[in-house]
Image (cartoon, rainbow, N blue to C red):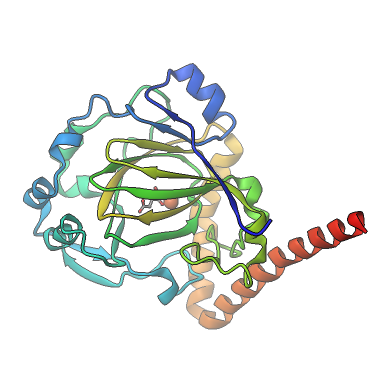
Length: 299
Ligand SMILES: O=C(O)CCC(=O)C(=O)O
Ligand SMILES: [Fe+2]
């Protein structure tokens, strides 16, 4: 094994609720649904021009490359601010840049956009107050992480293509998870197997998500996202039906995130270095044990 193994994600045109629940939600298996948004006018209406018309003057916070900026912290400070309209122009022109807008509630600024989509009946437990949007320039990426609240996410793609790489929670032991966060220390845009040898053993999925497609990302799944073109997505969330996940999710949001924020504030680099060192030590230990076992069974 000298590099990670990635398999395609199942793709369906449409799926009924029972089939979806038993084969994807329950086993926490990702799925691409092509016609999830079959009743949505958003696919025609949400052009860059239209979004510029409805909220172009608003100032938005843009995030840059995570490695340049507090790489071990959950909450990254924004890199700069810009008028939303000017930023959208960069996406329309496919201007290469690291700049992204993360977890953006555009609907607060332009509530009329809420009429352009619905919450499809393929599942229940929709968190209807939290439809978010994500925007990214061509060439930007979102570090490997899982969502701290442990809800299910349905991410629908508009305009360009995004490459999405996923790993189930059972792969966490190989993913250099930073303690007190839901992030990995490893940079998947440029995998360094010398520094992060456990990544050789990881098994996951990959799919290039295109305009109109929706990816179901089950609760707790690790995701790494590359914007191949300038593009954006709408993400709808639903509650996990595991009570334990609901409690863990709330605990992560209310306790762990705050704890990380405060310790970071007081101990800064020491805290960062500690987390990074722990992530690398713990994961490399697992690899060493695995390799020792293998050599003792083959000799
Ligand atoms: O697509 C993105 O920019 C980030 C998506 C993401 O991390 C999420 O939906 O949880
Ligand atoms: Fe996420």
